[in-house]
Image (cartoon, rainbow, N blue to C red; front, side, top):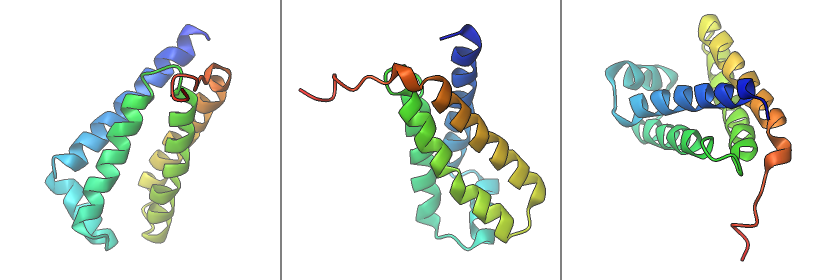
Length: 119
């Protein structure tokens, strides 16, 4: 695996870690966004947990492709939300992050190693 894709996966991990942390911290702008979209308050913490968990999983090369693929699928939610609420600038950001996740998953697909999970 080349250095660029390794650093790209670290950047993706940082993006998901920081956005997830903002949700878990209950920052006001995150709460306002979830209220504007009509989602219950508990949902912000679930999303934050998924984002932080995915970011941590991206740090381990054995599961990096699976984590990135999962996060790419997860990003369907924000994409749909931004379309439904006509938030076009945020839609572009969500699409870029989604495509970035899929690209990381593709780059690291041959490194998936699950024997440590199966004993």
